[in-house]
Image (cartoon, rainbow, N blue to C red; front, side, top):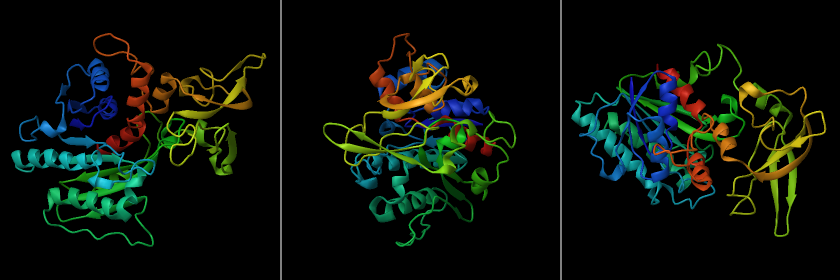
Length: 362
């Protein structure tokens, strides 16, 4: 199987593909730093540049096309301009490329697509935008098909499916904390299959998480096993405002704030100080919240208090499921600045969630 990645960023979809034995063939991205990073890890993958300049009929056909289209206009913390917004409107460019490829290949490629976005897409424009998303994707297979809008009372559900005569699509909100990374990151993933009615099976009939977990294992149990006890509320008091922090000590959770309050968009986290049993305290590299899975030891770590600080780029890589140092250097050997790494990682996908979906496609 082959894959093409639109709005590629730092190669989250290609990385998940390689882990599942799927070949990433090409990617589209316009920002220099993410391209530089991705070229280092995928030197044989073709880079197509600006999506608005791509003709889908002229690029190499692939089995799967992925696109985490820009979400600023759909996010609750964004401008909420919806699909008509300048950034989120690029969704239609992705569909154009897909349609052009299918027309050029006698409607053979791609056979499947994956779309990723924020849960705010459900409520943008009073639910009309998500209706547009699934309707326009369905029309790739059946032009003119109409899909009813969800009721105003119930809104869009966190999981659902649509079956057509010659296509199927399904969506599900996945929270990264249940796929083995220590952060709460809820995202809509939508799969469309243009050759069968089995899109829902990809989400709902898998026997295990991803290839990294044993059959029947509980992905992320070290991080999320205590969440059923409920969240604790803490308050960060500063000179200018008091922003509520919703958190569970097992999981690093961003500060909740509307309208850009203290820490809302700065990557601040409430993290435990830990003691190694010998009086040595650390809230960085040995924090049990953020260590890689293979390094977790809890017998000699004692949470003593909490501190609000900015995560390191390495911690952000682990939060998203990337290998350590993934964003540290470009293909030219030059070091990527921390600001560029934070931005790129924040815009990327949680790799284990994508891997779960691709494993279902196989």
